[in-house]
Length: 197
Length: 287
Image 1 (cartoon, helix red, strand yellow):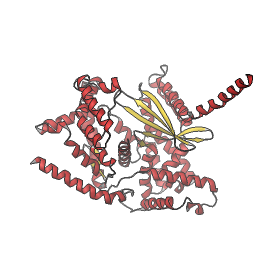
Image 2 (image 1 turned 60 degrees about the vertical axis):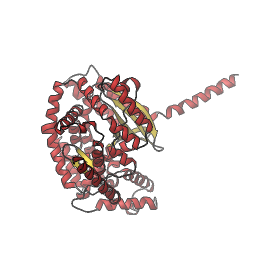
Image 3 (image 1 turned 30 degrees about the vertical axis):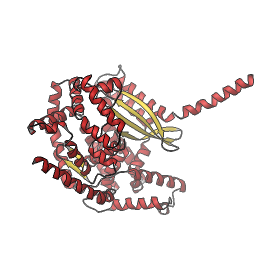
Image 4 (image 1 turned 60 degrees about the horizontal axis):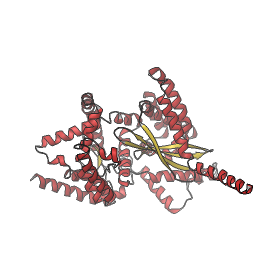
Protein backbone atom coordinates (compact mmCIF):
# COMPACT_ATOMS: atom_id res chain seq x y z
CA UNK A 1 0.00 0.00 0.00
CA UNK A 2 2.73 2.37 0.99
CA UNK A 3 4.69 1.56 -2.15
CA UNK A 4 1.67 2.32 -4.32
CA UNK A 5 1.18 5.66 -2.61
CA UNK A 6 4.84 6.59 -2.99
CA UNK A 7 4.78 5.47 -6.62
CA UNK A 8 1.65 7.54 -7.19
CA UNK A 9 3.22 10.63 -5.67
CA UNK A 10 6.40 10.18 -7.67
CA UNK A 11 4.41 10.01 -10.88
CA UNK A 12 2.48 13.17 -10.04
CA UNK A 13 5.74 14.86 -9.09
CA UNK A 14 7.22 14.11 -12.49
CA UNK A 15 4.15 14.81 -14.60
CA UNK A 16 3.42 18.22 -13.10
CA UNK A 17 6.61 19.96 -14.27
CA UNK A 18 5.97 18.66 -17.81
CA UNK A 19 2.54 20.28 -17.99
CA UNK A 20 3.95 23.51 -16.61
CA UNK A 21 6.81 23.41 -19.10
CA UNK A 22 4.39 23.53 -21.99
CA UNK A 23 3.18 26.90 -20.81
CA UNK A 24 6.49 28.54 -20.01
CA UNK A 25 6.70 30.79 -23.07
CA UNK A 26 3.16 32.07 -22.55
CA UNK A 27 3.61 32.42 -18.82
CA UNK A 28 6.82 34.35 -19.34
CA UNK A 29 5.35 36.83 -21.81
CA UNK A 30 2.12 37.13 -19.88
CA UNK A 31 4.12 37.82 -16.74
CA UNK A 32 6.04 40.67 -18.34
CA UNK A 33 2.93 42.16 -19.92
CA UNK A 34 1.06 41.98 -16.61
CA UNK A 35 3.97 43.73 -14.91
CA UNK A 36 3.78 46.53 -17.45
CA UNK A 37 0.01 46.76 -17.07
CA UNK A 38 0.25 47.02 -13.29
CA UNK A 39 2.76 49.85 -13.67
CA UNK A 40 0.40 51.61 -16.08
CA UNK A 41 -2.64 51.05 -13.90
CA UNK A 42 -0.90 52.03 -10.66
CA UNK A 43 -3.16 54.60 -8.99
CA UNK A 44 -0.24 55.87 -6.94
CA UNK A 45 1.53 56.96 -10.12
CA UNK A 46 -0.86 59.32 -11.84
CA UNK A 47 -0.07 62.61 -13.50
CA UNK A 48 2.83 63.95 -15.50
CA UNK A 49 5.44 63.87 -12.77
CA UNK A 50 5.00 60.16 -12.31
CA UNK A 51 5.28 59.67 -16.05
CA UNK A 52 9.07 59.63 -15.97
CA UNK A 53 9.13 57.05 -13.21
CA UNK A 54 6.56 54.98 -15.11
CA UNK A 55 8.67 55.05 -18.26
CA UNK A 56 11.74 53.93 -16.30
CA UNK A 57 9.86 50.98 -14.88
CA UNK A 58 8.46 49.98 -18.27
CA UNK A 59 11.94 50.32 -19.76
CA UNK A 60 13.36 48.00 -17.11
CA UNK A 61 10.71 45.38 -17.84
CA UNK A 62 11.31 45.62 -21.59
CA UNK A 63 15.03 44.94 -21.05
CA UNK A 64 14.08 41.63 -19.49
CA UNK A 65 11.27 40.90 -21.91
CA UNK A 66 13.01 41.54 -25.23
CA UNK A 67 16.15 40.11 -26.76
CA UNK A 68 17.28 43.17 -28.72
CA UNK A 69 20.32 41.35 -30.02
CA UNK A 70 18.18 38.68 -31.65
CA UNK A 71 15.68 41.28 -32.81
CA UNK A 72 18.41 43.28 -34.53
CA UNK A 73 20.06 40.31 -36.18
CA UNK A 74 16.80 38.99 -37.54
CA UNK A 75 15.76 42.41 -38.76
CA UNK A 76 18.87 42.97 -40.85
CA UNK A 77 19.06 39.24 -41.69
CA UNK A 78 21.30 38.95 -44.73
CA UNK A 79 22.70 42.44 -44.21
CA UNK A 80 23.81 41.75 -40.64
CA UNK A 81 27.20 40.45 -41.68
CA UNK A 82 27.79 43.58 -43.75
CA UNK A 83 28.19 45.51 -40.51
CA UNK A 84 31.39 45.25 -38.52
CA UNK A 85 31.09 44.43 -34.80
CA UNK A 86 31.20 48.11 -33.75
CA UNK A 87 28.49 49.00 -36.26
CA UNK A 88 26.45 46.03 -35.11
CA UNK A 89 26.62 47.20 -31.52
CA UNK A 90 25.63 50.73 -32.45
CA UNK A 91 22.81 49.43 -34.61
CA UNK A 92 21.34 47.46 -31.70
CA UNK A 93 21.41 50.55 -29.48
CA UNK A 94 19.91 52.87 -32.11
CA UNK A 95 17.25 50.35 -33.06
CA UNK A 96 16.30 49.98 -29.41
CA UNK A 97 16.00 53.76 -29.08
CA UNK A 98 13.86 54.03 -32.20
CA UNK A 99 11.49 51.35 -30.95
CA UNK A 100 11.26 52.95 -27.54
CA UNK A 101 10.56 56.40 -28.98
CA UNK A 102 7.95 54.89 -31.26
CA UNK A 103 6.06 52.77 -28.81
CA UNK A 104 6.54 54.30 -25.37
CA UNK A 105 3.94 57.02 -25.93
CA UNK A 106 1.46 54.49 -27.22
CA UNK A 107 2.02 52.31 -24.18
CA UNK A 108 1.73 55.28 -21.84
CA UNK A 109 -1.61 56.24 -23.36
CA UNK A 110 -3.09 52.89 -22.37
CA UNK A 111 -6.25 53.41 -20.35
CA UNK A 112 -7.94 50.18 -19.36
CA UNK A 113 -8.34 47.94 -22.33
CA UNK A 114 -8.43 44.23 -21.58
CA UNK A 115 -5.48 42.07 -22.53
CA UNK A 116 -6.26 38.39 -23.01
CA UNK A 117 -3.68 35.70 -23.69
CA UNK A 118 -5.14 32.85 -25.67
CA UNK A 119 -2.50 30.31 -26.61
CA UNK A 120 1.07 29.49 -27.52
CA UNK A 121 2.37 27.62 -30.56
CA UNK A 122 5.80 26.02 -30.67
CA UNK A 123 7.53 27.06 -33.89
CA UNK A 124 10.66 25.00 -33.28
CA UNK A 125 12.55 23.51 -30.35
CA UNK A 126 13.55 26.90 -29.04
CA UNK A 127 11.07 29.33 -30.57
CA UNK A 128 7.39 29.87 -29.90
CA UNK A 129 4.55 32.23 -30.70
CA UNK A 130 2.41 33.54 -27.85
CA UNK A 131 -0.96 34.90 -28.95
CA UNK A 132 -2.87 37.65 -27.20
CA UNK A 133 -5.68 40.06 -27.90
CA UNK A 134 -6.25 43.63 -26.81
CA UNK A 135 -9.97 44.19 -26.48
CA UNK A 136 -11.06 47.77 -27.04
CA UNK A 137 -14.58 49.07 -27.31
CA UNK A 138 -14.22 49.16 -31.07
CA UNK A 139 -12.39 45.98 -31.92
CA UNK A 140 -10.13 43.13 -30.90
CA UNK A 141 -6.54 43.65 -31.87
CA UNK A 142 -4.45 40.47 -32.13
CA UNK A 143 -0.90 40.84 -30.87
CA UNK A 144 1.43 37.87 -31.21
CA UNK A 145 4.82 37.68 -29.53
CA UNK A 146 7.55 35.50 -30.97
CA UNK A 147 9.96 34.30 -28.31
CA UNK A 148 13.25 32.46 -28.34
CA UNK A 149 14.78 30.35 -25.59
CA UNK A 150 18.29 31.40 -24.64
CA UNK A 151 20.14 30.65 -21.40
CA UNK A 152 16.95 29.27 -19.92
CA UNK A 153 14.91 32.42 -20.57
CA UNK A 154 12.18 33.00 -23.13
CA UNK A 155 12.58 36.46 -24.63
CA UNK A 156 10.72 38.29 -27.36
CA UNK A 157 12.34 38.78 -30.76
CA UNK A 158 9.31 39.84 -32.79
CA UNK A 159 5.91 41.40 -32.23
CA UNK A 160 3.16 40.81 -34.79
CA UNK A 161 0.29 43.27 -34.64
CA UNK A 162 -2.76 42.51 -36.81
CA UNK A 163 -0.60 40.33 -38.99
CA UNK A 164 2.19 42.88 -39.42
CA UNK A 165 5.53 41.64 -38.11
CA UNK A 166 7.72 44.32 -36.60
CA UNK A 167 11.02 42.89 -37.76
CA UNK A 168 9.75 42.17 -41.26
CA UNK A 169 8.49 45.72 -41.59
CA UNK A 170 11.81 47.22 -40.50
CA UNK A 171 13.73 44.70 -42.58
CA UNK A 172 12.03 45.94 -45.73
CA UNK A 173 12.84 49.53 -44.82
CA UNK A 174 16.49 48.84 -43.95
CA UNK A 175 16.99 46.68 -46.97
CA UNK A 176 15.77 49.46 -49.22
CA UNK A 177 18.23 51.86 -47.58
CA UNK A 178 21.14 49.41 -47.70
CA UNK A 179 20.48 48.68 -51.36
CA UNK A 180 21.81 52.13 -52.17
CA UNK A 181 23.81 53.18 -49.12
CA UNK A 182 26.62 51.85 -46.98
CA UNK A 183 26.09 50.53 -43.43
CA UNK A 184 27.75 53.69 -42.08
CA UNK A 185 25.20 55.81 -43.92
CA UNK A 186 22.40 53.69 -42.51
CA UNK A 187 23.72 54.37 -39.03
CA UNK A 188 23.79 58.06 -39.89
CA UNK A 189 20.12 57.92 -40.85
CA UNK A 190 19.27 56.14 -37.60
CA UNK A 191 21.31 58.54 -35.47
CA UNK A 192 19.48 61.44 -37.06
CA UNK A 193 16.10 59.88 -36.39
CA UNK A 194 16.84 59.23 -32.74
CA UNK A 195 18.40 62.64 -32.30
CA UNK A 196 15.40 64.29 -33.85
CA UNK A 197 12.81 62.21 -32.05
CA UNK B 1 -24.69 54.06 -70.27
CA UNK B 2 -22.72 54.64 -67.09
CA UNK B 3 -23.11 51.00 -66.20
CA UNK B 4 -21.66 49.91 -69.52
CA UNK B 5 -18.61 52.13 -69.08
CA UNK B 6 -18.16 50.84 -65.56
CA UNK B 7 -18.42 47.24 -66.69
CA UNK B 8 -15.90 47.74 -69.46
CA UNK B 9 -13.60 49.37 -66.97
CA UNK B 10 -13.88 46.45 -64.57
CA UNK B 11 -13.42 43.84 -67.27
CA UNK B 12 -10.46 45.76 -68.64
CA UNK B 13 -8.83 46.02 -65.23
CA UNK B 14 -9.49 42.36 -64.66
CA UNK B 15 -7.87 41.36 -67.94
CA UNK B 16 -4.85 43.48 -67.12
CA UNK B 17 -4.64 41.92 -63.70
CA UNK B 18 -4.73 38.39 -65.09
CA UNK B 19 -1.94 39.30 -67.47
CA UNK B 20 0.05 40.93 -64.75
CA UNK B 21 -0.50 37.96 -62.47
CA UNK B 22 1.59 35.78 -64.73
CA UNK B 23 4.24 38.42 -65.28
CA UNK B 24 4.36 40.03 -61.90
CA UNK B 25 3.92 37.01 -59.72
CA UNK B 26 7.39 36.15 -60.90
CA UNK B 27 8.60 39.68 -60.48
CA UNK B 28 6.87 40.24 -57.17
CA UNK B 29 9.59 38.40 -55.31
CA UNK B 30 11.98 41.04 -56.57
CA UNK B 31 12.14 44.45 -55.01
CA UNK B 32 11.06 46.74 -57.83
CA UNK B 33 11.46 49.93 -55.89
CA UNK B 34 15.04 50.18 -57.07
CA UNK B 35 14.82 53.53 -58.70
CA UNK B 36 18.61 53.76 -58.87
CA UNK B 37 20.44 50.45 -58.87
CA UNK B 38 18.88 47.45 -60.48
CA UNK B 39 18.87 44.19 -58.66
CA UNK B 40 21.70 44.19 -56.16
CA UNK B 41 19.19 43.05 -53.57
CA UNK B 42 17.21 41.03 -56.09
CA UNK B 43 20.32 39.15 -57.08
CA UNK B 44 20.91 38.41 -53.47
CA UNK B 45 17.34 37.15 -53.12
CA UNK B 46 17.79 34.88 -56.11
CA UNK B 47 21.06 33.58 -54.72
CA UNK B 48 19.35 32.89 -51.45
CA UNK B 49 16.57 30.93 -53.11
CA UNK B 50 19.13 28.93 -55.07
CA UNK B 51 21.06 28.26 -51.91
CA UNK B 52 18.02 27.07 -50.11
CA UNK B 53 17.13 24.74 -52.92
CA UNK B 54 20.58 23.24 -53.41
CA UNK B 55 22.30 22.58 -50.10
CA UNK B 56 22.32 23.70 -46.53
CA UNK B 57 26.03 24.40 -46.86
CA UNK B 58 26.43 28.20 -47.05
CA UNK B 59 29.13 29.63 -49.31
CA UNK B 60 29.83 32.46 -46.88
CA UNK B 61 31.51 30.05 -44.46
CA UNK B 62 34.56 29.98 -46.68
CA UNK B 63 34.93 33.75 -46.41
CA UNK B 64 34.98 33.73 -42.61
CA UNK B 65 37.51 31.15 -41.44
CA UNK B 66 37.95 32.77 -38.04
CA UNK B 67 34.36 32.01 -37.01
CA UNK B 68 33.32 28.73 -35.46
CA UNK B 69 31.55 26.24 -37.67
CA UNK B 70 28.41 25.83 -35.55
CA UNK B 71 27.20 29.40 -34.91
CA UNK B 72 27.66 30.31 -38.59
CA UNK B 73 25.56 27.36 -39.67
CA UNK B 74 22.85 28.29 -37.23
CA UNK B 75 23.00 31.94 -38.19
CA UNK B 76 22.72 31.06 -41.85
CA UNK B 77 19.69 28.94 -41.12
CA UNK B 78 17.99 31.68 -39.16
CA UNK B 79 18.79 34.25 -41.81
CA UNK B 80 17.54 32.03 -44.60
CA UNK B 81 14.42 31.32 -42.61
CA UNK B 82 13.80 35.01 -42.01
CA UNK B 83 14.48 35.94 -45.63
CA UNK B 84 12.15 33.22 -46.87
CA UNK B 85 9.32 34.63 -44.83
CA UNK B 86 9.61 38.11 -46.31
CA UNK B 87 6.82 38.88 -48.74
CA UNK B 88 7.29 41.67 -51.19
CA UNK B 89 5.31 43.54 -53.76
CA UNK B 90 6.37 45.01 -57.08
CA UNK B 91 6.32 48.80 -57.17
CA UNK B 92 6.76 49.93 -60.77
CA UNK B 93 4.50 52.95 -60.21
CA UNK B 94 6.87 54.17 -57.53
CA UNK B 95 6.85 57.78 -58.67
CA UNK B 96 3.08 58.06 -58.79
CA UNK B 97 2.77 56.17 -55.49
CA UNK B 98 5.27 58.35 -53.68
CA UNK B 99 3.44 61.40 -54.94
CA UNK B 100 0.14 60.04 -53.72
CA UNK B 101 1.74 59.18 -50.39
CA UNK B 102 2.71 62.83 -49.93
CA UNK B 103 -0.74 63.95 -51.03
CA UNK B 104 -2.46 61.60 -48.58
CA UNK B 105 -0.14 62.73 -45.82
CA UNK B 106 -1.17 66.34 -46.34
CA UNK B 107 -4.80 65.33 -46.86
CA UNK B 108 -4.79 63.60 -43.47
CA UNK B 109 -3.17 66.41 -41.51
CA UNK B 110 -4.80 69.36 -43.26
CA UNK B 111 -8.29 68.01 -43.88
CA UNK B 112 -9.26 64.57 -42.61
CA UNK B 113 -7.83 64.85 -39.09
CA UNK B 114 -9.22 68.32 -38.23
CA UNK B 115 -12.63 67.41 -39.64
CA UNK B 116 -12.62 64.15 -37.68
CA UNK B 117 -11.57 65.86 -34.49
CA UNK B 118 -14.37 68.39 -34.88
CA UNK B 119 -16.77 65.56 -35.59
CA UNK B 120 -15.61 63.63 -32.50
CA UNK B 121 -16.12 66.69 -30.34
CA UNK B 122 -19.75 66.81 -31.37
CA UNK B 123 -20.53 63.11 -31.32
CA UNK B 124 -19.55 61.10 -28.23
CA UNK B 125 -17.93 57.70 -28.58
CA UNK B 126 -21.09 55.71 -27.94
CA UNK B 127 -22.90 57.46 -30.78
CA UNK B 128 -19.96 56.95 -33.12
CA UNK B 129 -19.82 53.26 -32.23
CA UNK B 130 -23.49 52.90 -33.09
CA UNK B 131 -22.97 54.68 -36.39
CA UNK B 132 -20.04 52.37 -37.11
CA UNK B 133 -22.21 49.36 -36.38
CA UNK B 134 -24.89 50.75 -38.68
CA UNK B 135 -22.50 51.09 -41.61
CA UNK B 136 -20.98 47.68 -40.95
CA UNK B 137 -24.46 46.23 -41.00
CA UNK B 138 -25.46 47.63 -44.37
CA UNK B 139 -22.23 46.43 -46.00
CA UNK B 140 -23.19 42.84 -45.16
CA UNK B 141 -23.76 41.94 -48.86
CA UNK B 142 -20.05 42.45 -49.60
CA UNK B 143 -18.99 40.13 -46.79
CA UNK B 144 -21.75 37.63 -47.44
CA UNK B 145 -21.03 37.24 -51.14
CA UNK B 146 -17.27 37.05 -50.70
CA UNK B 147 -17.50 34.46 -47.97
CA UNK B 148 -19.70 32.44 -50.34
CA UNK B 149 -17.26 32.86 -53.21
CA UNK B 150 -14.50 31.52 -50.98
CA UNK B 151 -16.77 28.62 -50.02
CA UNK B 152 -16.72 29.69 -46.38
CA UNK B 153 -20.28 28.58 -45.84
CA UNK B 154 -20.39 28.87 -42.08
CA UNK B 155 -19.05 32.41 -42.19
CA UNK B 156 -21.49 33.37 -44.93
CA UNK B 157 -24.31 31.97 -42.85
CA UNK B 158 -23.05 33.89 -39.84
CA UNK B 159 -23.06 37.13 -41.82
CA UNK B 160 -26.67 36.56 -42.79
CA UNK B 161 -27.54 35.74 -39.20
CA UNK B 162 -25.76 38.86 -38.00
CA UNK B 163 -27.72 40.97 -40.49
CA UNK B 164 -31.03 39.62 -39.23
CA UNK B 165 -30.15 39.79 -35.53
CA UNK B 166 -28.56 43.21 -35.65
CA UNK B 167 -31.31 44.75 -37.76
CA UNK B 168 -33.98 43.51 -35.38
CA UNK B 169 -32.53 43.19 -31.88
CA UNK B 170 -29.67 45.50 -32.64
CA UNK B 171 -32.27 48.03 -33.75
CA UNK B 172 -31.55 48.87 -37.38
CA UNK B 173 -27.96 47.76 -37.00
CA UNK B 174 -27.03 50.42 -34.47
CA UNK B 175 -26.09 47.76 -31.99
CA UNK B 176 -23.98 44.68 -32.58
CA UNK B 177 -26.34 42.35 -30.78
CA UNK B 178 -24.93 39.30 -32.52
CA UNK B 179 -21.41 39.87 -31.27
CA UNK B 180 -22.26 41.19 -27.80
CA UNK B 181 -24.93 38.71 -26.81
CA UNK B 182 -24.27 35.69 -28.98
CA UNK B 183 -20.55 35.95 -29.71
CA UNK B 184 -21.09 35.73 -33.48
CA UNK B 185 -18.27 37.79 -34.88
CA UNK B 186 -17.92 39.57 -38.19
CA UNK B 187 -16.09 37.71 -40.94
CA UNK B 188 -14.42 40.42 -42.94
CA UNK B 189 -14.05 39.43 -46.57
CA UNK B 190 -13.80 41.50 -49.71
CA UNK B 191 -13.32 40.77 -53.38
CA UNK B 192 -9.58 41.45 -53.19
CA UNK B 193 -9.29 38.76 -50.52
CA UNK B 194 -11.38 36.43 -52.65
CA UNK B 195 -8.96 36.88 -55.54
CA UNK B 196 -6.08 36.26 -53.13
CA UNK B 197 -7.81 33.15 -51.84
CA UNK B 198 -7.72 31.72 -55.34
CA UNK B 199 -4.04 32.47 -55.78
CA UNK B 200 -4.14 35.76 -57.62
CA UNK B 201 -1.19 37.90 -56.57
CA UNK B 202 -1.24 41.60 -55.90
CA UNK B 203 0.16 42.48 -59.29
CA UNK B 204 1.75 45.67 -58.08
CA UNK B 205 1.36 48.40 -55.48
CA UNK B 206 -0.88 51.39 -56.14
CA UNK B 207 -1.54 54.30 -53.81
CA UNK B 208 -4.80 56.11 -54.51
CA UNK B 209 -5.47 59.65 -53.33
CA UNK B 210 -7.72 59.64 -50.25
CA UNK B 211 -8.46 55.92 -50.52
CA UNK B 212 -4.86 55.08 -49.63
CA UNK B 213 -2.66 52.06 -50.31
CA UNK B 214 -3.95 49.34 -52.55
CA UNK B 215 -2.77 47.00 -55.27
CA UNK B 216 -3.93 46.12 -58.75
CA UNK B 217 -5.77 43.08 -57.45
CA UNK B 218 -7.32 44.88 -54.52
CA UNK B 219 -8.38 47.83 -56.65
CA UNK B 220 -10.22 45.54 -59.05
CA UNK B 221 -11.73 43.98 -55.94
CA UNK B 222 -12.77 47.37 -54.62
CA UNK B 223 -14.51 48.28 -57.87
CA UNK B 224 -16.22 44.91 -57.95
CA UNK B 225 -17.42 45.31 -54.38
CA UNK B 226 -18.96 48.66 -55.31
CA UNK B 227 -21.65 46.70 -57.12
CA UNK B 228 -22.50 45.03 -53.82
CA UNK B 229 -22.33 48.23 -51.81
CA UNK B 230 -25.88 49.44 -51.11
CA UNK B 231 -24.78 53.07 -50.84
CA UNK B 232 -23.55 52.96 -54.47
CA UNK B 233 -27.15 52.71 -55.60
CA UNK B 234 -28.27 55.88 -53.90
CA UNK B 235 -28.97 58.78 -56.24
CA UNK B 236 -27.94 61.50 -56.72
CA UNK B 237 -24.25 60.60 -56.59
CA UNK B 238 -23.42 63.50 -54.28
CA UNK B 239 -25.55 61.90 -51.56
CA UNK B 240 -23.82 58.55 -51.99
CA UNK B 241 -20.39 60.15 -51.79
CA UNK B 242 -21.51 62.17 -48.80
CA UNK B 243 -22.64 59.04 -46.98
CA UNK B 244 -19.38 57.25 -47.72
CA UNK B 245 -17.48 60.32 -46.54
CA UNK B 246 -19.44 60.28 -43.28
CA UNK B 247 -18.58 56.62 -42.88
CA UNK B 248 -14.89 57.35 -43.45
CA UNK B 249 -14.79 60.23 -40.99
CA UNK B 250 -16.65 58.16 -38.42
CA UNK B 251 -14.24 55.25 -38.79
CA UNK B 252 -11.23 57.56 -38.67
CA UNK B 253 -12.45 58.94 -35.36
CA UNK B 254 -11.39 55.65 -33.77
CA UNK B 255 -7.98 55.68 -35.41
CA UNK B 256 -6.67 59.17 -34.78
CA UNK B 257 -3.08 58.74 -33.75
CA UNK B 258 -2.49 55.50 -35.65
CA UNK B 259 -1.00 57.21 -38.68
CA UNK B 260 1.09 59.50 -36.50
CA UNK B 261 2.47 56.45 -34.69
CA UNK B 262 3.38 54.82 -37.98
CA UNK B 263 5.40 57.80 -39.17
CA UNK B 264 7.02 58.19 -35.78
CA UNK B 265 8.08 54.55 -35.73
CA UNK B 266 9.25 54.32 -39.31
CA UNK B 267 12.67 55.03 -40.68
CA UNK B 268 11.16 55.21 -44.18
CA UNK B 269 7.41 55.74 -43.80
CA UNK B 270 6.55 55.11 -47.44
CA UNK B 271 8.21 51.68 -47.38
CA UNK B 272 6.84 50.94 -43.93
CA UNK B 273 3.27 51.59 -45.04
CA UNK B 274 3.71 49.59 -48.22
CA UNK B 275 5.17 46.64 -46.36
CA UNK B 276 2.52 46.79 -43.62
CA UNK B 277 -0.17 46.79 -46.30
CA UNK B 278 1.24 43.66 -47.93
CA UNK B 279 1.65 41.83 -44.61
CA UNK B 280 -1.81 42.83 -43.41
CA UNK B 281 -3.55 41.75 -46.62
CA UNK B 282 -1.65 38.47 -46.56
CA UNK B 283 -2.98 37.80 -43.10
CA UNK B 284 -6.53 38.68 -44.12
CA UNK B 285 -6.36 36.34 -47.10
CA UNK B 286 -5.03 33.52 -44.95
CA UNK B 287 -7.64 33.73 -42.23
